[in-house]
Amino acid sequence: MVSPERAQSTEYNLPFEEEKPRHECGIVGIYSPGNNAARELYYSLITLLNRGQESSGIATYDGNKIHLHKGKGIPYSVFDEESLDEIPGFLGIGHNRYGTTGIQPEINAQPMVEDTFDGKIALAHNGNIVNAAELKAELVDLGEKFQSTSDTEIIVKLFARANGDSWQERIRNATDKLHGAYSIVMLADGKLFGVRDPLGFWPLCLGKLNDEGYILASESAVLDYSGAEFVREIEHGEIITIGEGVPKSEFLPREKSSFCIFEFYYFANPDSSFFGRRIYSARKEMGRKLWEEYPVDADVVVPIPETAIPAAIGFSEASGIPTDRVLGKNRYALRTFIAPTQRMRDADARRKYNPYKELIEGKKVVLIDDSIVRGTTTPKVIELLQKAGAKEVHMRITAPPIKHPCFFGIDMATKRELIASEKSVAEIGKHIGADSLGYLSLESGLKAINSALRKDLCTACFTGEYSIEAPQGYDRAVFEPPAIRLSVR
Image (tube, helix red, strand yellow):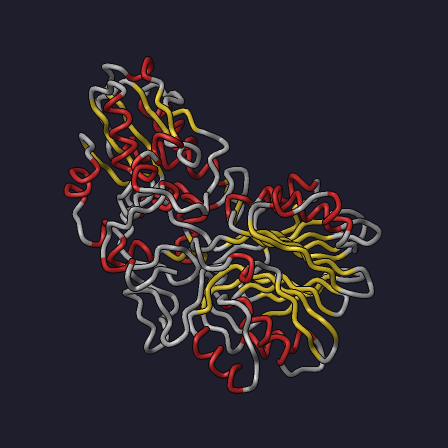
């Protein structure tokens, strides 16, 4: 979350990585009788590092008890052979978390385990509950004590207290109280449960692992790397139960889908697919349409690694202008939780990218990226190219201007943070130091994805048309629920 102090200005001195919108997390669940779930979950979480790098965790069930191991950092640093051996079982869930630096990542790490009258449950969650403050206050009045600042703890306590003769019924009764966006994996009663909110903001898909096994994951790429057969995406409002026999499904009351369009622009792995559309193909087509809308006389097309690479290829193919990996990227530059000095902040772009001077000196460059959120670091990249000898730098963006904050689980926290909410395209172009600037229109972006999906996609960050309104008292301007502050997961 963004503190009120930080929300007072668009100049936050953010680390370089903070320019990009940050997703909440990635989740995975595995049911694989006769096999070790922990190791499969570990490799699945590595595939989902694009969705969170602050903390990682795995909970497993061995037929008798739930085992849990989690901690600060990425899976490589949280798990080793010994820790994986300590969480045995054929059934398990895993979680990668993204959260704001300094908000106790160890305490907020998932999965979270809770006692119930029928034994322990473990739950991991992707999303944001907009009425979390109200629910937390109700649970506190009932005597619940909270250890974290994450709304995931609210969900797991709500599920643990829910009435019903079965876990499916308890999930239905608990989710009746949840307002917002959520995809959930849960261990209970020796079964794996998956839940998507009635609008299906965040993804969850189902794969077949072997004769008896199944996997649930945020992205289909996880299934590919696991050797699983893709079965289908979990539908919006669906509760799926995986145990012995064929998975069973039932549905929460629902009307329409409102899937986050930013999965196509930035969040998802390029080899994942949603609604049958491969992310790589959609991004490449966005690049083609960028050329149609904003042609330019140039010598080379340069993507900002990594998500903009397919769009740069599409722009190059449509325009005939060659593309090249002019910006070398430090592949080991993961997010840091060490507070940088001002001198270090000023060097952020240099530490991450290194332009190949001989490829751009004296040339007109088209720089391709997927978005401009705060406008704090794009100028640094352009300056790098200019100092390396680029004659001109023309910026092209595959997503439309982001003018409205998201309170469904993306760290685009305040309207004041969004440069496009206060500046025109011309003013943004001047601010970032580009010779020209062009954003792909929403209509062209939808065509690149699949025009038929328009009714199924949430575009609120561009249009301000939200599928769920925040509850009364929720200050969208600073993105802080009233009375009780909650961290991003």
